[in-house]
Length: 327
Image (cartoon, rainbow, N blue to C red; front, side, top):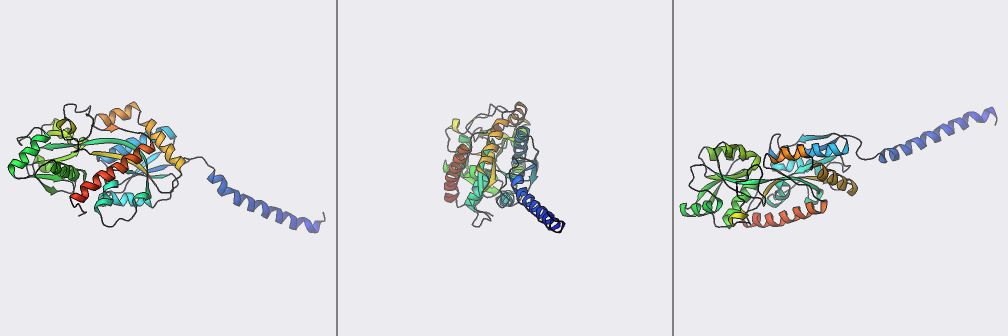
């Protein structure tokens, strides 16, 4: 090869090599095994609440299994809509998930306009469930849910606090009304405000997550009438379920589950589900939740999908009959 041609040949060879490297770089990156960096769990509520506590337990469980950090990001607002919308519109790359609650199902039932569609969030797995415990002031002359129903009818109505329209306590109140209770909704901005109102005597009763009410029950500031899930709480085994009191239809839980943006690789969805289910068997994590009245869950993707559909159908009927709407 003549010296006059060696220069151009070298230039072309270098250009070809550079082009090949440029083309292969995205492929190499795409081939990187998931996960290769931090994963984010978005909690659509403020830090410190029941959903946040369960989310952190779930994040810890998954992180221990996959060997990557799973961080919590709180994005509260509009009853969980703000955080859910953020995840629904996030890149479906397996690094952003929502830790949703009942509102993930019910918001679309009571709000005329939603910034995302229900199928924009893909169910991944159920983390845990906390029953909603129906509580009353210790001075109220009732000792169980059936007696509350009878007492409310005899009194011609009693005030029942909720954490706002479409909240879990609101659904409990409507379920009780379907069983004959005469209750008047008194909406507050949060469950903690509702509890304070019951303790202070402003309202007769309410229903809230076990983690919120158990300390107050143990302190004698609230009277437990019944738990709205189908299992006894090891942390409070003496609180009967509503089903045991002949009211199986009064059933709802403060559950928390993982959702992914639509379009997330199904293999990643199944992997997260599998690691969550296995991770929730961790003894330390389980004991931490159980002592707060929270039941660790897990289970397959399919079982969580079925659960979400069942809750949407069941609660949708109640919301429609009660003419629930976002405030």
